[in-house]
Amino acid sequence: MAFEFIDTQLALRQQDGYYRQRTCIDYERDGVIAINGKHYLNFGSNDYLGLRHDQGVLQAWVEGLAQFGGGSGASPLVTGYSAAHRELEQVLAEALNRDAVLLFSSGFAANQALCQALFAEQGDIVADKFMHASFIEGATASAARLRRFAHNDYEHLSAILAKSTSEHRLIASEGVFSMDGDSPDMAQLVGHAESSNSWLMLDDAHAFGVTGKFGLGSIDAYQLSQQQCPVVMGTFGKAVGTAGAFIAGSHALIDYLVNYARHYIYSTAFPPAQAVATLHALSRVTQGSEREKLHSNIAHFRARARQEGLQLMDSQSAIQPVVVGSPTRAMALSVELANRGLWVPAMRHPTVPKGTDRLRITLSASHAERDVDALIDGLMLAQQRVLFNNDCSEING
Image 1 (cartoon, rainbow, N blue to C red):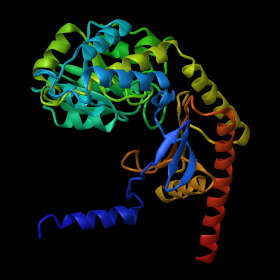
Image 2 (spheres, rainbow, N blue to C red; image 1 turned 135 degrees about the vertical axis):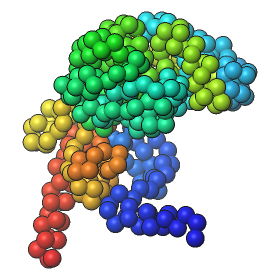
Image 3 (cartoon, helix red, strand yellow; image 1 turned 90 degrees about the horizontal axis):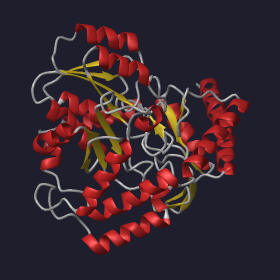
Image 4 (cartoon, rainbow, N blue to C red; image 1 turned 60 degrees about the vertical axis):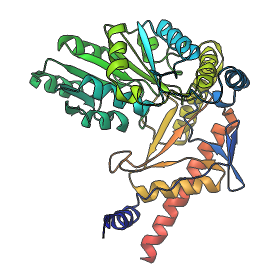
């Protein structure tokens, strides 16, 4: 029978504790989500600044809809490129001190487009082991040879670069890593790129909108020039609160992508109204008080966690993982927290390496300090409950 492996593979996923199912959200507001008639404090969203429900952002959407309609109507190279798209690109380019910017429908599409366009012919991509799946998928689908260095291990990076004989090399890392919440040593990355005559590319999806003096991500935080970091990818669907993504770089890079990036050429442009809303959201990122509130919540969470003896990873970002090492234990903790009105998703292999299954806590400017306190209290109680149940199972077994 054709595709008979489907049932077998699904059964294996369930047996190993890695089976995934979707959860339908009825609605969300002010950091609270409703699921099947029950309400939870949401600690699973990437809406780090709470801008998805900002009244100004919503009004900008409405104004964009009135001016441009519901969709773009075509790909950017046909009739889908509007004045709103152009303005968003220009504002971003100026803010990031880059020559130009190109918009994409998603970060996944942007990463795929970059890898496959730059490496239509052979070259070397040297990527951090923890690079997002969208980039790794793009790299493996290109003509490049993909080599991965151990996470934030610059001796390993140097060793790989020393063996590369290609004329075209791209070093890839993230501004804030999506599962661990940590950041690379930017000076090390820039230094290795310069000494090896490689380009440096940063996936800034989880840093853009959060880090830096103006919230513009790693380029802002570390004052990286276009020469130091020729390729920047960022997204709008996280801290910015809308959707879509961009690549920023030189005029030549952007012109090349316009001509050779198939994910751009053959995809309908995202709605102009979305670009209008994103422009307003960017003004909130750079001028609003949301980032200050977010970083206050991060500091409070980590201080309370230390007081309670809760083991955290070295993350100063909105992403605060609690590694438990077992998929079944991670799921059990997530369920226990949900029973206490706290929504904290479990992350399991293959999203994270085997043995590092975890709760991935994400903090937001939408959370009040009392919400963070409730999370800490819930974590301590959930851990005690899961440990007690495991002990009972061993005794009964």
